[in-house]
Image (tube, rainbow, N blue to C red; front, side, top):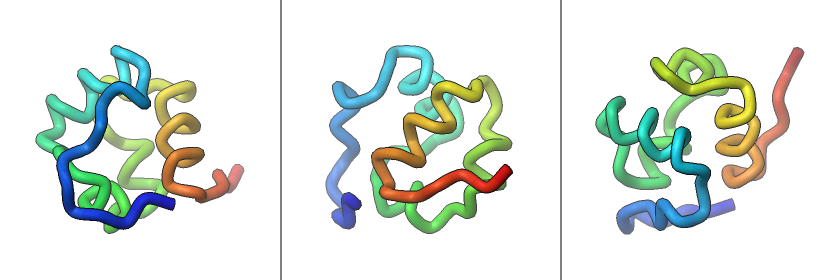
Length: 64
């Protein structure tokens, strides 16, 4: 799990995930960590693959 306030290293995400996060104004892992799984799932333009990719990087599991 990543727990720093430094800007995200966007190279760890696919391009479409990067775009969705950027459009949502998210720039740090700390911001993502503060969001619930539901809030992450509701990021506009983020598909299932991006959702699971983010959860994996945060060390979380998805609930059905």
